[in-house]
Image 1: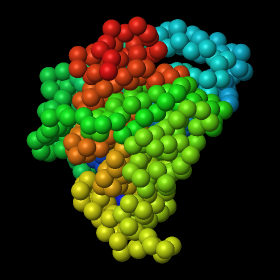
Image 2: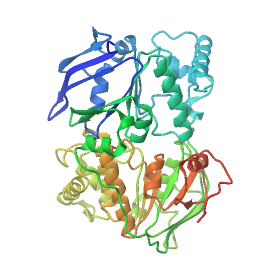
Image 3: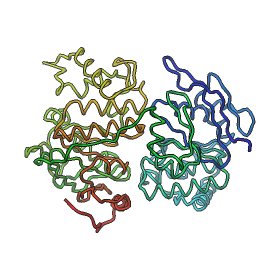
Amino acid sequence: MTPLLSLKGLTKAYPGVVANDDVSLEINPGEVHSLLGENGAGKSTLVKMIYGLVKPDHGEMKMNGVAYAPSEPRAARGSGVGMVFQHFSLFDALSVAENIALGMENAPKLTALSEQIRKVSDTYGLPLAPDRIVGDLSAGERQRVEIIRCLLQEPKLLIMDEPTSVLTPQEVDILFQTLRKLSAEGTAILYISHKLEEIRSLCDSATILRLGKVVGTCVPRETTAREMAEMMVGKVLGTPTRAGLTLGETVLEVSALSLPSPSAFGMPLREVSIQLRKGEILGVGGVAGNGQDELLAALSGELLSPAGSIKMRNEDIGHLGPNARRAIGLLAAPEERLGHAAAPDMSLTENAMLTGAARQNLERNGFLNWPAARGFAEKIIEAFDVRTPGPGNAARSLSGGNLQKFVIGREVLQNPEVLVVNQPTWGVDASAAAAIRQSLLDLAGKGAAVIVISQDLDELMEISDHFAALNEGRLSEPCSTDGLSVEQIGLMMGGAHGMEVAHV
């Protein structure tokens, strides 16, 4: 069989780093091929070359045995390559059909396009009404918009980058049914994910990258998740562990907290109540867009709630802003790392100063202690294995996973009494994710109270003592994670009531 896509000796270098070093692989028609590697392994650069976003320095690509060198994404799409990116590129105020039309070279009239959308939706089990406004869609429905946009181009190769990071287990099942149908029809799929059990379930083959080089291949169904993870990092991985669980007194108490969303397409919080004890890790699950950002903003002090109360050590802190809450020990790490958790064009030293000034004694009487800030940044880089030339580098120069390690490390090393994190390991490889989870377990082991907001259910089950689901801005009663199944959690995230779980 002639490979659909053949890469031979692809090399791409940037100043100070070789992103891809002599990479070769083949993908056959109808094959679901996984691309594995830790953050910074070269996955993103490789798919950008395939999709025409980056030009290789050396090597060659062939499509169906014919030379393939797309100068831009439009040329790649013209050759039958489609890509669904990890971050959606949609306009909230426009309809599904209008968004899809914007991504087409010669879009038909909306009535004709709407009919095409309905046909593809029905064929591939992706229910979606073309006249719905994107701002009203769930994360799973938004992903369907991106997928249908690609399918309308009848791709021969579909590249998917972290496609399940914002989906419930039930939505993942729907997506996998669609991908298997496409594969059976002869469409090849290049699948990138850090969720190794998903790869074992879906993919036919896998290529493993490490530091820009191909270090191995495997058949995922015949390889354990741990074996794949260890191939990715080149070492034996440890399992996050925690000392015996001993919960202390209540340190954070939230009662009937309600908050309108600052965004027209956001989700207001509705009478959220939380009791968090010292040493406790509370996992909060939910499909993206159900109030996660608003919950973190309300707890961190970025948004002040007009209704309800927030108390820390029995003292009302609901009127305090972020800096005042940080000073008394309530710290937070938001989901959006570049632009919210970190200033893109500022150095790591400057970003360390932004949230660490008070608790790390980096300023006095209005004067900033930059040598101390640099030392704090260096401490974060070393403790959390942040891959960067040094603390003088800008935040935007780091890969997503390495910036995530820096952001989490910056907050953990300030020894908070309460830490609220949203998506702590989003887009992070297996080794880095294990390190971040261990740091949260260690923090709780020292007596800190931790709230982990995440769409990674395996993560929540691994580190949380109790679980609560966020749905349409309402938080369910927390329940013990002991004996709680992923299926039950999925139903709770979807708003199901009457779950037979052990409440706290």
